[in-house]
Amino acid sequence: MDESIKIKVENLNLLIGRKHILNNINILIPKNKVTVILGPSGCGKTTLMKCLNRLTDLYPEMKVSGKIFIDNKEILNTRNDITKIRKRMGLLSQRPYPLPMSIYKNITFGLKISGRRKRIFLNKRIEHYLKQASLWDEVSDRLKEPASCLSIGQQQRLCLARGLAVDPDIILADEPTSALDPLSSEAIEKKFIELKKSYTIVVVTHVLRQAMRIADYVVFMYLGEIIEQGEAKEFFKNPKRDKTKSYLQGVFN
Amino acid sequence: MITKKLIKIIEEAFFRVIMFLSTCIIIFALGLIIYSILNKGIPSLSIEMLTQTPKGGFYFGKEGGILNAIIGSLYLSIGATILAFIIGLPVSLYINVFLIKRRKFVNTIRFLLDLLWGIPSIVYGAFGFTIMIFLGMKASLLAGIIVVTLFIIPIMVRAIDEGLKTVPLGLIESSASLGATKSEIAFRVFTKQCFPCIITAILLSFGRAIGDAASVLFTTGFTDHIPTSITQQTATLPLSIFFQLSSPIPEVKNRAYAAATVLTIIVLFISILSRILSEKYKKTIIKF
Ligand SMILES: Nc1ncnc2c1ncn2[C@@H]1O[C@H](COP(=O)(O)OP(=O)(O)O)[C@@H](O)[C@H]1O
Ligand SMILES: [Mg+2]
Image (cartoon, rainbow over all chains, first blue to last red; front, side):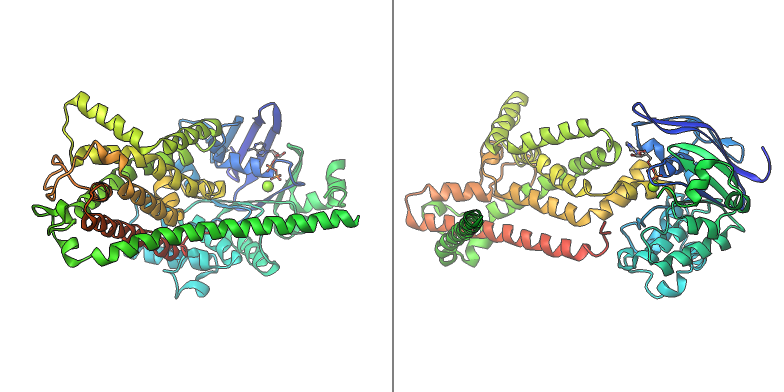
């Protein structure tokens, strides 16, 4: 596999009952870039994300077939240790789900279940990751307070910090700004652009403007199929398929 | 048109009155119960009642107290509550984390637990008694604890379950994405998110355990001593009330009310404690 490719999805199909939710998906996600998965609501973006870190395991009704390679390692193979694979990806969901504990413990949760318990080590990491998520200045004096006290925007950044703390190389974000106010959204978008130096970032969105602001690579989905994918500039300037063209002109949505 | 409106207004007023009346009936009944217990109980309540075991002739109105029943009841219900918690918590975590997508199966389990919840405690008592005879066991604190545990497990499980049920799938997904296994999600995330609910479940079960007479009627025996081992018989407050209330001697009867006062105060204390504790821990839980 090409060095510059981080995730390769090969002939991925997902069925729920008789319903084909994902239909023969093939994607190449480049390393250290922001890849945007774009498409109208209900086209299967969230489901595709769930395949990437195998959260589909939690849904027995989903029948997944095909292959997903991360750095040449096939992850859908059930013999692989799924917790290890998941730790390689930080997840941001549509709305933040902070853990029901203090800000401090939210960040250390991932580390602790991986067996890192030394206080000094944890304290250093906390500061580092909260700074990376631009949350440190706002919470440094109240790390012991429950995460439920934070605003939604802060919670989403906490979830980012918590995801980064397990030391992943991929960040998966499923409409991470859809519950946030414009300022918090902008903070998250900026963060992604900054973080792509060290992480491969996959962002799901149905907001065209957001895709244009942050994407290096775009995957356009419609009704469970990949219609078109390519470099962002090329994609937005010269879309090849009719469906893409009409989406970009705002025909759906 | 107008008549339709009028009917609506009358209907509204009618249900309002009904609701108001039923609320009144409930409050009145509760007040009456508490009043009649306290009215007869408080005068007979003395330090002696609380600190002494029955002396010779206690049941004929002579000196002594109900310390044996107080301690016995506490031993019994604390023991049973701990056992029921140790068994019940994993059960409710299991059906909510591991079986989350097996909705039919889980609902069947819930239905069975509700059936068990509905079985009168005397049936548990009789069942326990039969088993004891079969095993050649004598009435003892241990037998009582086992039967009461069986009797409160459904309460414990369903009460915890009501809280765990409300945890959104998103929280499981985000914990899983941090590399947590299902048992880590269960014991480190769910137990925290539902902590107030777990406290309520524990205290609810405890309240049921300490107040129930029928399940201990055949299983714990009754003695004037404070048990020093779980194989000994033990007195309990509900049975102590029952025996004293059956006495024709007015003094003894009044002492039954004093014992009932003690029991009521314990249960009241437990309810208030559960409120305070769950309020206190509500802050950490995430509202979804
Ligand atoms: N657990 C599920 N059970 C049944 N249908 C589902 C489930 N999850 C998703 N779907 C269906 O799959 C399709 C894609 O959903 P989703 O991936 O959430 O779309 P998107 O994120 O693009 O809005 C939708 O039609 C949705 O109804
Ligand atoms: Mg979605």
